[in-house]
Image (cartoon, rainbow over all chains, first blue to last red):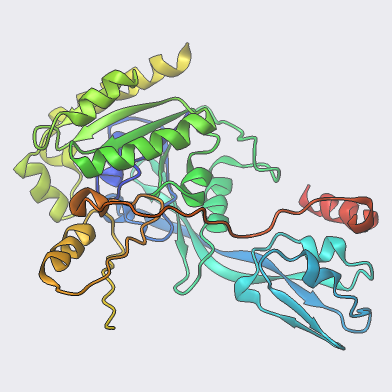
Length: 289
Length: 82
């Protein structure tokens, strides 16, 4: 089973919920796909045993074979190649690594070389298998690093669609927003838990996230964090849209203090462990039928 | 014109609220919400929308016989991915 924890809006408590859910269950693998701002390690303090470089394949032209026909520049959607008279200019930082230039090259003059764009870390936090990705500073391409994290954890096939599900539970900490990195993170998941807050901001971005998940046909439910502050609009929206509200976490000073010290809430509020187990059971029920 | 960028790294730290507060203080101003995949500034500023424009970027590749790829290269690339 793969559960992705997403939100749309930032700072609603995705990492907090994902981490505490993981700590409440057994035989869990944790993937932090928020590779721009990976934070789960602060709670989980994993012992990192392996570090790998994440690379992007970028073109390298063999000028002995090149006829300067310009086909590579023509097919590149990101203007990463320019052909001027008898010279080929490559802008690696614009390249998305699609490989189109080498596929379309009639002279077979383009090979692909690796450009490092991020780092993958694998380790253990207690019994939890932990993997996170870190995008290198100054890099813009997030998706390949997210893909690398998922591939390391789940063994995604090159066609990117089939996820070979293991017997144990995988929990994915998804980045905020609603665009490509989010889609890449939730794709192939059995269920998506949307963490929101009862504010106009939480609701606005929840509606956007729901739109993404419906399009991807991934079953989902909502967890309302800081549930006793704000308004009732999120509740009304979920009722109207028949979206199950699976758990509520109230605004609690002790949880906030623990958070501010990087301590998971179930350490200061052990009674929440039972609630997270119940949450998992509800998700199991929702995905079984 | 002076440009001030409000940024955080972490989500939910209060970028939008600080930006909106600047909006109520500044006299002659243009506010831009660049958080395009989850834009929220409008919830605080309640703008009247005067114009809406389509935005398009990138290219769609259409495959016709005249620009079909070198078949051998496609095979090689597919073999590499397996």
